[in-house]
Length: 346
Image 1: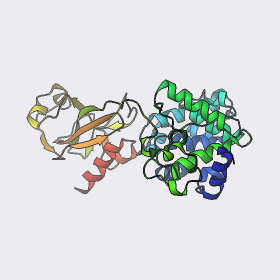
Image 2 (image 1 turned 180 degrees about the vertical axis):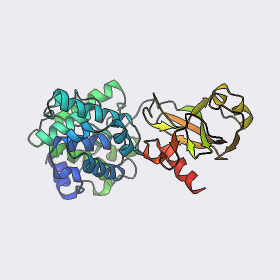
Image 3 (image 1 turned 135 degrees about the vertical axis):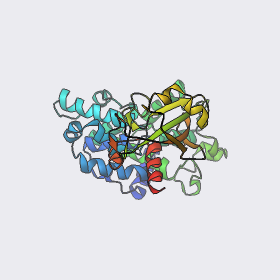
Image 4 (image 1 turned 90 degrees about the horizontal axis):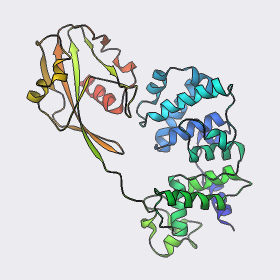
């Protein structure tokens, strides 16, 4: 039995009952694939249902405000996905007259859609013979064939794509692609793969050499950058505060308290000496208290953010227009969201 046939047979008997598998609607498949980028299925499921409920078609998504979309996306991370989702929905409605792309070459033109996502939509919805290569596929192929080329290298990306394409069942492209991804997620897992029950265990190179945990190979790891955030949480006497929309970075267009970034951790004495801090207030009549005695470390894929929340109480001032009772209506990062939940109960 061929590699593809074995995977498909396993898939038909073991696949999970996921909502996006009950449809070949390209909008819904696109939405699920964007949500599942960098996201576990169990976490992404909730967001998929929320988006389908609020935006059942690409038209509704295109007509929504970016703020609505970011608020619904809140907690999922990698917010550029949400911004790209909105951009592409408007592109489909305005430039393609509401007709969702049907081929790989058309799909890959959508902002936020790369080779993997275009291949997934094209094969699942339209059975186009284009192979998917995601983290699960890299792992399955690297282990089964014993490939030591780093998967995050230019050579590796090309090599694995070519191999995946050669192995593809062109008559059942969508099923084949879903099968190999599901196999990697459930059977050939990153940690503790189920090799003893694997239908491919009699021909897996990594297993035969007892080197399963050595594959796939990755090149040099990304250097983690340390950043130091000081959020100024202002409490005016009329129960209003100040929040601002972030203009750049991974949290672009999300809201946050006034932020002062420093080169290292600072104390209260150092804080009040900063020009950026004093520019926030029209009066010197303020009281300051550090909310978190222990620094909050928010870990992202490429940076660790060391955060202090400084509570500053002051009199009624102009420019502080957000009432504390409405602050949770704004889309914010997980870091700010967690603070608000803790601050409310203190």
